[in-house]
Length: 131
Image 1 (cartoon, rainbow, N blue to C red):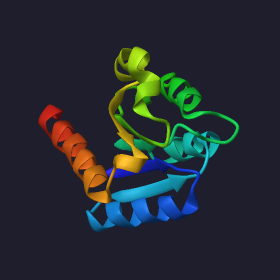
Image 2 (cartoon, one colour):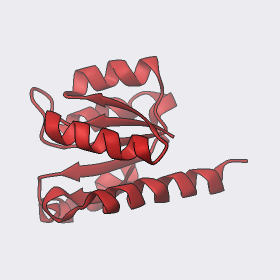
Image 3 (tube, one colour):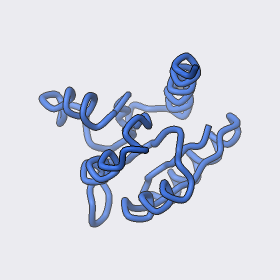
């Protein structure tokens, strides 16, 4: 799978990239929303792993822009963030239905194994949905 990671912390970005590459995925990592849009345009990802706390444009702003392009509307997004999920309890349906967030992982409670399992679930779902 071709995965786009949007993670401003370079240490975490390298860790996630290496783990996903070892699992057989191709990974492109960006530190901000603008470079992620350019990257997605060059090479459409099969899935996105997104930190919500970004410099200049938030992850939510990125999602609105990302979903404004018809060719990116069906790409699953996994939020992997330091923002506690309780912040989005009232807006989970918005994240899920309108912005295509398939899972929300809270970094302090997420292991690499959990991230890999979540990506694998996205992969499995994509295979089941393909003709």
